[in-house]
Every structure is written in structure tokens, then in C-alpha cells.
Image (cartoon, rainbow, N blue to C red):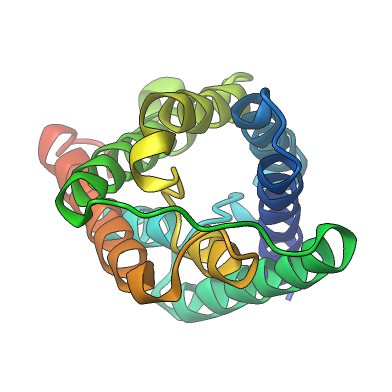
Length: 204
């Protein structure tokens, strides 16, 4: 249960940072989000692996570093954390305004940077070559910051199905577009796991 609570807390604070910084229209929102993710990973990595993202959980599972019995509870607690954060942000700030997206472009943007995020996680937090490093949280947080800056205006920069659910509740993503984030981000995580296993076939 400690692992699951850690996943809930980390996802909660990630979505809490997303909602407050985006609805508050802070120019440094991508940095605030990336920093929050980084520190939550440093805080929870030794307990749960600090996925805080269903796409990452799927990637780590495919890679063989997450027990099958933990996949559904991890995702469930991540979603609960996202929902709780969205409710609190809405209480503090009200709801944001969801912009229109071009589905094809948003699909490419979310697929690309969710893959990048999961790929970085696998290589800095699960690979033999980077075992016991001290930079894994920063590398993962910076990937989200880079993605939010690079393509946030195209797709909203969720890169995370739990963040997308929270964003819908906070009015930052249209409910009709939620499927894209649930399907494409999850697919990107699975693809990253397959790519890692293919390239690092000797890293069991």
C-alpha cells in the first residue's frame, strides 16, 4: 500500500502544479511543472519507482521492472491523485478555458513527447548503465519541461493520461478530446518499453 499511496501523492502534486500554474497563466508554468515532477520523483523513487503516470507504468511493466500485480493499482491510485488535485485546483482557482486542438497534430505531439518521457525514465531509472545515479529525477522533470515548451501550444502538453483526466476536470482539455490522451499516451509508453527492450536486450 505504501507504493500506491506514493503514486497517489506524486501524481496529486504534479496535477496540482499543472492546474495552478496553467490556470494562473504563469509564464514559467512548464518550469514549475517540471520541477514539481522532479522533486516528487526524488521523494518517492525509492518507494514506488515514482511513475506518477500510467504511460510510464506501462513502459516500466513492458520493460520488466513493474510487477503485473501492481499495474492496475498504480494506475488507479495515479488517477485518484489526479482527480483529487483537480478538485482542489478548481476550488482554489475555478476552471480554465480549454483551447481547440488539431487532432492529427496533437496526436503526433503527445505520441512523441510521451515516448521521450517514458524512454528517459527507462534509461535513467531502470537501466544497468545508469544504476544508482543521482540525476534521474532532474532528467525526467526536464523532459516534461522541454515537451511543454516545445509542443504545449499544439496539444496541451499532457504526456500523461492521469494529467489529461485532471486537465479535463479543470477545464484545460475538452472532454471530447480525452480519448486521444488516454490512447496515444498509453501507446507511447508501451512503444518506449518495447524500444528499450529491443535496444537493450542484454539488460534484464
